[in-house]
Length: 279
Length: 257
Image 1 (tube, rainbow over the protein chains, first blue to last red):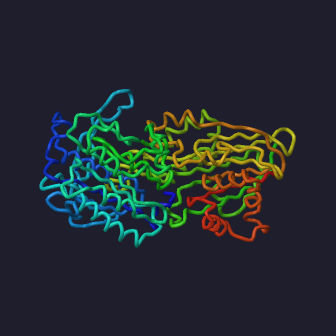
Image 2 (spheres, chains in turn green, orange):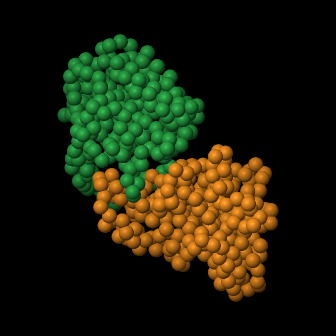
Image 3 (cartoon, rainbow over the protein chains, first blue to last red):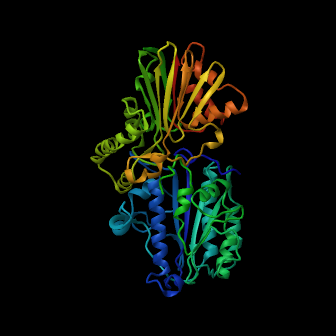
C-alpha cells in the first residue's frame, strides 16, 4: 500500500467524478451573495478539472492515455453526466475526452502582465459537463455506482495507481447514510493502495473556503463534518507535494475541501517530472 | 596546450515509450554512435532532461545543450543566450497545427534541466581545470581511481524529487530558475573520469555510493570489452529489479587520457 505505482499508458489509472445534481444545487453559492448557482459552480469546477487532467496528459504528439475518466451525476437519476458526443459513456480514455468535448467556449481570464499588473486574455474553455439541478440526492446509490465501476476497473488493472474519486456535493443525502457506501468504496484496492475518495462540499454557508483540513472541529456544519469523515487521508507523497505548495498538512489531513476547488489534486499526481516553476 | 579525451554517450527511452518520445539531450550527440577520441584545447559536453509534464521539451533540451557546447559555458553568456534560444524554440513549434490542449501546452512553454562541463588543460600536460554549469537534477560525477571526488549539483539520493526547478522556454517562468543556476569548478588530472547523467541514473549512482558499492565501475566499463551487456539490456535489468526509476536515461562519459 505505497501509492508508488507508475502511471503510464501500459498501466493507466482512473478518475471518477461524482456530481450532485439534486434540486438543492439550484441554490446560490456562499449564502446567496454569489450570482452563480451551486450547479453552475460545480459544472465549471468539473470542466476545469477535466481540462487540467487533459493538459497534464498532453504531449507534442497528442494525448497519452495515463487515465480513464468517468463523470457520474446523481439527482433525478444516477448515471453518466457527460454531455455532447460522450453522453451516456462511463469510463472514457483521456485522449477521447480531449478530442470530444461538447463545445469549446471562449472565456475571459485575468492574467499577470509581467509588470505587476493584470490584463484580460481570452482563453479556450472546453465543456464536457453542463449544470443540472433536479430531484433528490441519491448519494448512496451514486457511491455504490462508483464502487461497481471501480471494482470492474481494478479487476482489469490490478497493479494500477489507485483510482481517485472526486465527489462534489452540498452534502444532504436523501437515500440513507452515505458513510457506509463511502467506506466500501475506500476499501477497494489495487496492489498499490486503496481507492482515494476526496469530497468537496459546495455550500450556501458563508464560511471561508477550507482546503485539506486535518480536523473536523473547524468545519462550519454537520454536512461538512460528515463529508470530512468520508474522505481518505492524503497518502504520504501527495501530502509532501501539498506541503511543497504551501498547504498546512499533517498525517491527519484528508482529501476534503469546503467551497474550494480541487484543481490542486491534479497537480499532486505524479506522471513524471513536473517543474517546480510550473503552477 | 592540447589534451586527449575519450567521449562516449548512451541513452535509452523510458520503458513503454518509443525512441521518438525520448526527451533528454546529449552533446556531442555523435558520441551516441561511437566513442570519440578528441585531441583539442577544450572539451565541452552537456546533457539535459526535458520535463515529462511539458510539451516539446526534448527540443528545448537540445537547444540548451547545443548552446552550451558552442561556447555559452559561463553563467553570464549562458543567460544571455537564452532569449535567442527561446525565440528559436517558439519558431520551431509555432507552425504546427495544434488542438486546444497542445496550444495550451505551447502557451506554458517547455522545461528542461541543463548540465554542462568544460575542461581545459593547464601549462603542464595531463592536468587542468574544469567548470560546470547546472540547473535541475542532471548530475556530474568526477571519479579518480576508486574515489568519487566531486558530485554536483546534487550529492545525495535523498535530494531527488519529481519537482525540480527547471529552465523554461518562456522568460516569465524563469525568474527563480535563473537565480538558481549553479557554477562549479575544480581540477582534473590524467585518468580522471567524468560522468554526466540524467536523474534516474544519477539517483541510482548516489544510492550505490551511499551503500558503499562503487557504481562507477559499471559506468566505466560499459561500451567496452570488459562489459558483456549492452547499455539497453543493463538499464532494463536495473529497471526490472526496481533499482532504477522508469525514465529516459542518458549517460555521457569523459575519460581523460
